[in-house]
Length: 436
Image 1 (tube, rainbow, N blue to C red):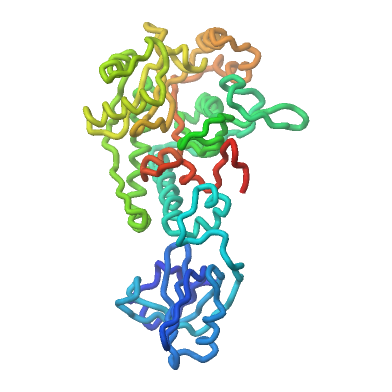
Image 2: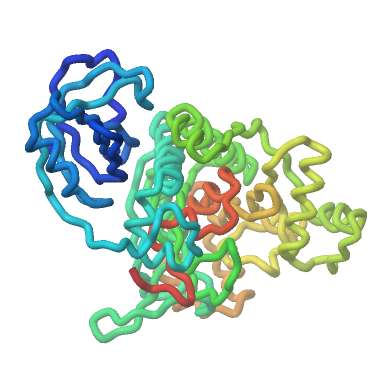
């Protein structure tokens, strides 16, 4: 390796020890007989100090050859210095240039640039501490969710991203050519997750990309997003699913709070771990709540963005909570595989998780009874042949089950109060953006 330490490892306790750092030149400054280099890596910055007479003339002169964002290695000794940001600095003994950066830079760190220009030069944008902090926090959130599931007997599985048929009709899907045949990028790996549960792995999860050909141009929509998708067998009802989901979410928040204090400091953000259980609002009571808040929604209709925001306000005022579950959606608005209430078939055991007015996930209990699945597919005017690859498995013993899929970028956006979901995506895919 070209380094022995990262910048985060440098401190006064290493006084006198020889180290090798590697990273990007963030700044070069000269003050009389002193020259300073600020070197940055994925963990932060460190000061390199060269005093004329204390270092060789060759080393002292070489510092002037470094330009901003050059990639270098520095070998030297740690020296205590209370004035340095880490309580220590490096006295250089040798340098090596690994890569020179062209000048001027297309993205100046000191100048506030628009989101489109920043995304055009994402690798440069990522070098800003506040941008890198977002993705380190996002990594911690996913790690926390995975750790909770691992500790609670969930098995990580991998489901296909290319589908031979669509799971929810042809709307909002991306067709692809697959060996001269038409196929589709998945909207959600749910149907395959159900088949995994049917196979006996009754606690499973899948983390991966999903695609929707949605031409929306909002601050919360993407054409490609990552999801933490979970499926659970042997449930009593959809409330079992909600109780699992809220624990997964809380674990992600807890991990980010515990592991990312530095990054949260860089962003000047604080994380509050959501209280469990999350409040649950059910249809048709939802219509009454909205009517009291001045929003009229036709009985049996789905709700819109404005209604979600109003319900978020309602829960915040009544329960002092940022999260809520919506349950018992109108079945007429839901796909064929959702379980209905047997005694009230107009309502589905379908749930959405909402945080401060933004939907973060959808889920609920699935229909596991073969005859009911076929009946509901017919009601949704689907040909039985088109779903046969899925429904035939339900002839052979499938337990009651359900699940959910949490949008990873959306949960990070709400956690950190980001204005645009594209801030939580390294390389966003939107109706206009396909590169880099």
